[in-house]
Length: 254
Image (cartoon, rainbow, N blue to C red):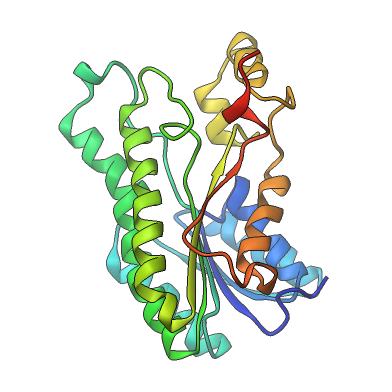
């Protein structure tokens, strides 16, 4: 407990799934948290939960495709809580799926905008605030899809999420001298709304489950604990990594 005491964090995609679980865990560990997503009512419910448990949080609803939104998230952290130490850039989408010959240019561009460009825009302003404060930790949510292996019909998703790994490495190299660490997590399948949207039958879920060495999918809280490690001082010498949190999917052939 208290691994994030006196720290201030931003979490995007916080209205559900991994983001929501991570925001709650950050608060439990002592951080003051700015939670972001499009759905204001879900964010406000999350803030109520955090504060009922004795934590501190504020909701800022908006669209991660907007650079102004990322400016607002950072300015809110600094103005309300005095600083910015941690950012978990987790917002994402499956995007337009299906055979690549049928994916529209607009659908592909939108997927990149939500999954990749938004992460760059977020980090652009987070890094500046952290550097002014003596350093910090940024974590992106990438995926095993397009890194360990891929699935048919997910070109936009795989391309956008794989791009986060290059972004992670570039930012880590550029801002390491400012004591800003940058890492990405690569989850396997996680039991979230997005997972159930992509795997909407028992047969699909059984197939995905079998891909993992642990023969199950993760709970969002399990992924949150890996994010906590990278965000905390426990990972003080970890930067530029693409950290698999995939239940052994990357090494399983049975």
